[in-house]
Amino acid sequence: MNLEYLFPEKEISRLKIESVIKRDGRLVAFDAHKISDSIFRAAVDVGGSNRELAEKLTKQVIALINRAYPSGSVPSVEEIQDLIEKVLVENGHYKTAKAYILYRAEHAKLREEKSSRIAAEDNVPYKVLWKVFTWNVDHGCDSVEKLNKTIIDGKFAKLVKDSEKSYHDEIGKVADRIISGRHGIRMVIVAGPSSSGKTTTTAKIGEKLREKGLKFVALNLDNYFKNLDQHPKDEYGDYDFESPQALDLGLVNEHLFALLQGKKVLMPEYNFKTGRRTLDAREFKLKENEILLIDSLHGLFPEMTSSVPHEMKFKFYIEALCQIRDSNNEFVRWADLRMLRRMVRDSLHRSYDPERTVGHWHYVRRSEKKYIVPFINKADYVFNGAMPYELPVYKKYLFDGFPGIIGKYEKDPKKLDAYIRAKRVYGLLEGVLGLEDFSAIPKNSLVREFIGGSSYKY
Image (cartoon, rainbow, N blue to C red; front, side, top):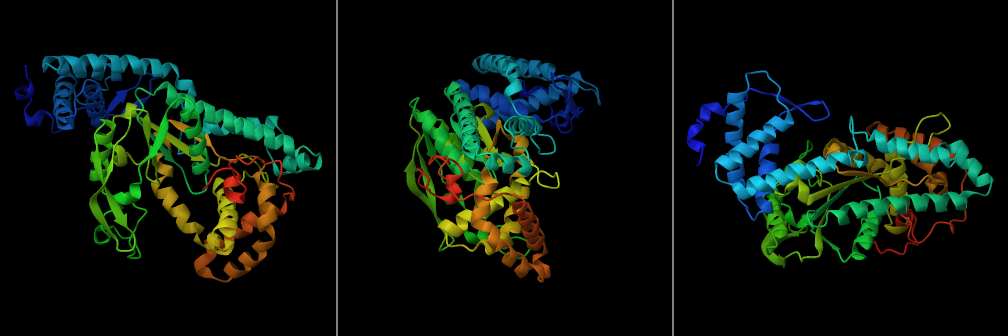
């Protein structure tokens, strides 16, 4: 029986409830989109593909909620899910209802693994930070002073070895998560700020997957840019390529959904010289053993992948979570470590003056804070991309150049942020003992992505 006629529009135009109680007792805002997503995911599991129907059924659930609960009441998540099952069964969607019940059971199992999940409060993954910090304490590298002592005592090579082992152990954990969900996970989203180590880390995860017969296939989202005359502009009137609205999100979602259903899509191709795209330029289809890889500044932006059920996505976030204190007992800023990485890489491999990197860093940070940081709590896994032995390495390449950078920006009021940043980082490196011999750093190290000599091709 279709119940749609029983629910006049006025019953779903305004929700009587604003919050729900989660299983852990937390009070969270009620989100009708989560109902649509869960119904749609269950429908996809049994061969469905009609998202509009999922949204129509969601309206019926909302109407039932309005009838069942007085204004201001706070139902539990379980009670809402019971109503969802009722709507599915009474509309004759028995297969979807069965899949939804299995979906609830699976989530109960996932909650048991919650200790391995990451909580990010105020966009800070405190649990991961504590893990990184305690590792550093245990290995005598939680401060610049202790790091210097490690070098003086001739233990730098051991620190490198231990750090690399810890990093690769974590790579194994991520790969295992993906492999264990291989029948459900069809897309991996990798997100993280500039110079966080995305490229090397993604390559290493891919290596682990290949050992199990799986393969990453990247979707180049640059081809989904709108024509330049349709791009949003920033406050200066310049075209803003870093806004998610510069992408044709509708087409992105259409193609993502089709690809994950095993269908062929005709991808566009964007020409940066002309600022225009060609539609239907290239065929693309996923094979059975292939996992779609989205490596994008906007990977965690909800509207980027809204057509894909949550259970088909694994969202991976990487940041250089440096947990080392400087001579003032202040923790080294993650963004400062990443800037040092970028300065070395730009100067050694891209013929880009480190001075310009410092001067441009403000724009990099602005984009990160707007389009990446707010969505950290959407990630399924937060990964530390910092190595505790890096600072002595970068001192060799950059320290002598900082006085000139500081001098250039000191008298330019428009570059005050660059001056402050350069002076702070120069003070940090001043307290670090430098190194000349980097032979202890293996060829497959993430650090080699920036200083060169890597076994990977970038």
